[in-house]
Image 1: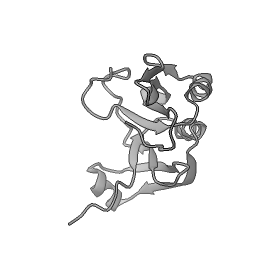
Image 2 (image 1 turned 180 degrees about the vertical axis):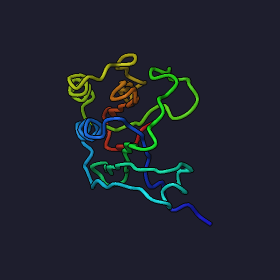
Image 3 (image 1 turned 60 degrees about the vertical axis):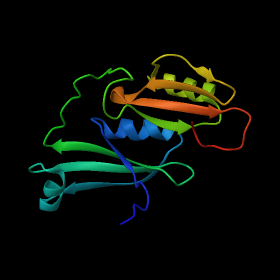
Amino acid sequence: MTTLRMDHVSVVVDDLEAAVAFFAELGMVAEGEAQVEGESVDRICGLTDVRADIAMMRTPDGHGRLELTKYHTPKALGAEQTHAPANTLGLRSLMFAVDDIDATVTRLRAKGSELVGEVVQYENSYRLCYLRGLEGIIVALAEQLGGEDESTA
């Protein structure tokens, strides 16, 4: 048995339309939306009477995908700490490689995001930052300095 790839990351949101707009502002492309429900969905989720809307988004390079899920039933539970610090156990951030971190921060701040700390240069390799965006989701940004490789540290 071999894992072929990581297919996508799923994020539960309360406002699907706002979430799609937020991640589109980061350059992600909407692939489609669907409503999911029924016995098989209940069994997969381990919940009863699931009815949810999902939106699939992909990164511009086509290699990364994000599933945004809005539960209608049962209602989604709120996170215990909406503004949890970076050292909290569990999923903390989604990182995106960008070509202009300052312009991206400006665009996202205009949409209501706020810097968690500050934009920092890490050695001579990257400029990095965390922004808290929609529903407390932390988005990490990385701008590579002086190189062609778009991978992050």
